[in-house]
Image 1 (cartoon, rainbow, N blue to C red):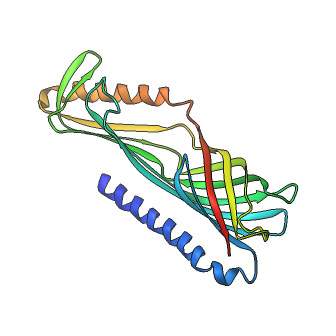
Image 2 (cartoon, rainbow, N blue to C red; image 1 turned 90 degrees about the vertical axis):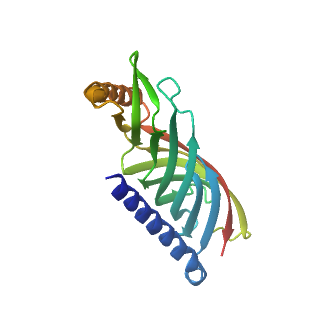
Image 3 (tube, rainbow, N blue to C red; image 1 turned 135 degrees about the horizontal axis):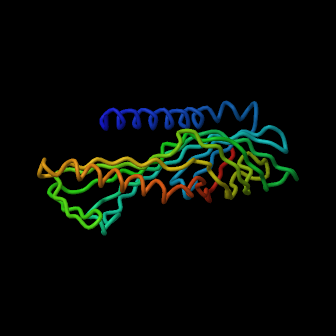
Length: 229
């Protein structure tokens, strides 16, 4: 159910925050054994934090957490007054390779992708689907992606570099999120038209999925500031 889904989403979010917080807390102790840096960043995945651990001059490992929420009130004005809440959340691990030993890096890894779009409409809203108007009491929809998404990209930044404490960081890459999956349910004010409304909503949902098939790759662009412990 929707309530269980929200509960599950909050649980994953708490786990993600706890992992990053634990890494940051342990940075001071870990710095004695290896080089550690933390990056605060902003980008297409939202606001994020990276914890980087040096593995010599040419390699490093990163844990990342990203999140952002935004509501767009007029998402589908043609059908009706539909609001879309973009709930972006992802976390994962990367391996960075610094081929020249400097700041330029090549990156590969994976993300737990909890990004989703939740669609809602006000009660007693009027929908128009395929030339027919429906009075509804409730509408809920969702667009989701694959839970696990491989990542590949390149960037600049070596948060654990011994040359200074502060460093600039940026990333350019792609998250392979798979074809978006859409679902929707609307309740008609008049129960007699509910079967027709169900057919129209299902048809619209399938068309939406077909239209979004090409969005299997999500561009990841970010910039931030790093601090070495």
